[in-house]
Length: 105
Image (tube, rainbow, N blue to C red; front, top):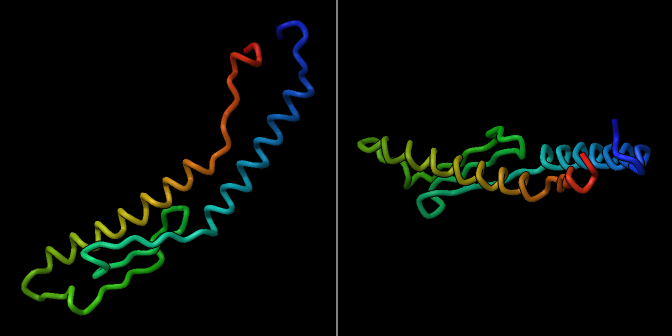
């Protein structure tokens, strides 16, 4: 079933270590916050590493009652900026997966 000479206990230990590292990375990301901005910092959004929006700051000069569409666009852009930062950090922090071909699988 498995290639001859394959160290199954070593493979299992490696998988368990990767699982522990993944859990730790996920916890660190969940505890991290990321702030994005738009419109020259007129709007700032803060998200958790999980993507949850936890803060929104809008400077008074961003509020034009005759142009709420621009404000809405700035809010969306700031949230997108913060979320992208969180996703980029998550991608960079994830442990590298082993090449299954090298493991004989």
